[in-house]
Length: 407
Image (cartoon, rainbow, N blue to C red; front, side, top):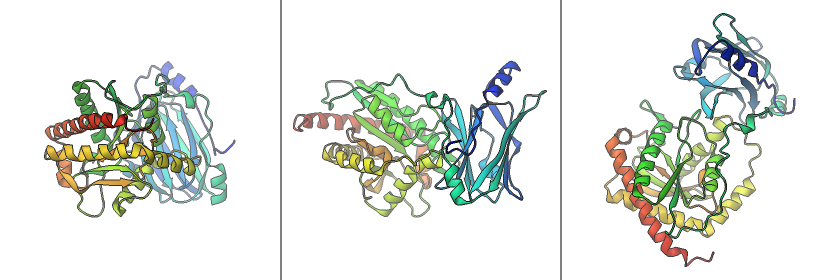
């Protein structure tokens, strides 16, 4: 069974649903969806309006139970209502990749999947997925944890049309390729404050900024995601490389549990954070893949260190110039800036060695004033215009410097 505890890929359910004339996404029945403690460990059951293909596996560090579905509409399912077992620390759910949804259960202790099956009601077509988890040892859990090899899974949702094309440094003679990266998405909601989700706000703003940049002319804009779906940190950077990006702009609006931070902040890459708050913020952002149930056991820290060193040689000064241009552009339009508007930290999405990359915190959802600004369409329009002007100014200055740099 390789490293996976248990793998089910029940494509027959999709055929049954189609045969019975069901359309649309499977919906969650909140009344029959629950986590409960049992004598042997813990039980999970998920009620669905129809059967769908699915798979189940566990990941370690920290221990997590992961369930993938094709595809489930999670609207109306409140994770706080589903998390009812002492053995479950937290539950997250949402879109994970095109055509697929994911539920992740953070486990308070190691469990093994003793049984997992989906029953389909012959009359209504409704489905009930039952999972029995039993206590096990940390060593056994770690040995059996891992992403299963599921036929066809790696081919789902690939952007085959995005070919890697070598691209020289921009000199203002060809359209500027800008990659906008709305933070979080899908199963990873980001900050959640005052009834506002960071993932929704950043997607909305990215779409608005894209329109402003496109209307400016001579700019091609690519989004790392254009819907509420999860995109891994590695893939966000890969998208920028595949489209030959001239710059990468990651958009966020985090929340801080301590302090009264407010206003925009622009981050560039650094292996050591400029302050403790930046270090904590980068750590939270970089954990997005793990929180969404992505296996990080193959991550190569040595390669990451090399990328950061390469970035400092030429791209880092260009990224820092972009950060300064953004700060100036926001100030000129009298938009709120943090008292320390320019900072640095080890954000994974900024580690491209050949693309100037910055991360912009448009504000903090933990600030009532910032939340009001982010929910105001007129304010967002001013912010988008300021960022567009900043990019235009940086483009001119960067092109002028191009011939002074040894290629």
